[in-house]
Length: 216
Image (cartoon, rainbow, N blue to C red; front, side, top):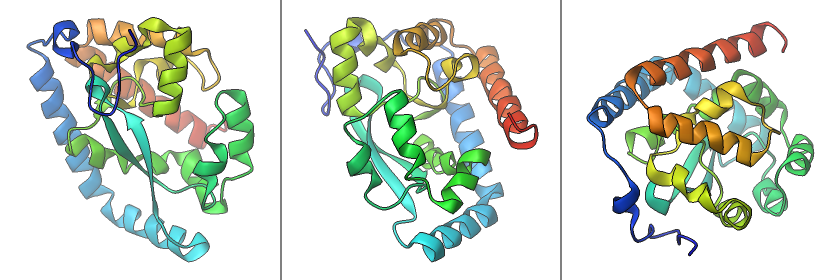
């Protein structure tokens, strides 16, 4: 049976295994998200102004994503695409989505994507309890249901909050197969710990710095 979304799926509590480390990871989420937002506030204000002046409102993109337990929430990002792009891109995923997205990226959006500043508003989702700093990347509801048809165990990644960054993202590229990424997502869920959480953060920071300043 395909686990339904939007209101969560029945039986979730029977497959979720809470651990003593979970409250610690949540405390790290709140501390990291809150501190980062305060420190970057002047930068975020400038980015908001640039987006508004160059391409108009809205400044933030809000996209439906499937969260922990199958609930759907609005994920925040700085808008990097032309207005209406979400509707135009909705039918696509994988390499075709990547190709078509490139044509929709604004000038400011290109800079935000290169530095990953477009992802920072997701820290608001972290503070709201909808996301974690580290976890499986959130996915659109339509993609989730399509993937369940091909990978029935895909729902298992929903037993934890989705992350701003994830274990799979430190090991694989955007175009790698969903099934291969799922293996790493489930590995993180099974082995989650403060040490692994911090390792993923460190690997993510290193990757961003290399891409931003090393031209990768």
